[in-house]
Amino acid sequence: MKSLTHRVASLGVVALLLGAPAQAVDRSPAPEGAGVYIISPADGEIVGTTVTIKFGLSGMGVAPAGVDKNHTGHHHLLIDLEELPSLDRPLPATDQVRHFGGGQTEVTVTLEPGEHRLQLLLGDYRHIPHEPPVLSAPITVTVE
Ligand SMILES: [Cu+2]
Image (cartoon, rainbow, N blue to C red; front, side):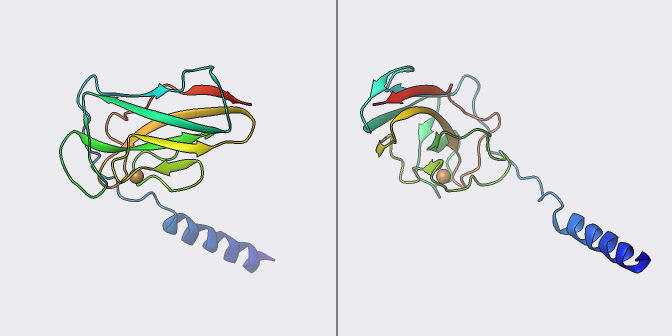
């Protein structure tokens, strides 16, 4: 029992080492006053199941992923995401974190009926949010 406890403890140490935070990355700077926002739909709007979401950006420029140019980035649409992903590493690509690495400024999505929360987060050429993060206010739409 004692040795098992010891072994479990050792495994715990190894797991801690393996799970140590990745090296902090240098996040790309965002200029003061930069902002991202959802142009449409409007917060609280009732929309159909197929909805076009238009992305707005001020104080910065849109550039495709992979293009390292100061004060630019590409959009990420967060759909019904309850908790923000880590901001010091590349954003995951999931159904809830959509990347627009081609520099797109709108998307048409199909959403299930009900309430949905939409938010935009700009990422740099590496898909890493800027410092400070350029994050929109969330909006809620009701799909009917
Ligand atoms: Cu991205």
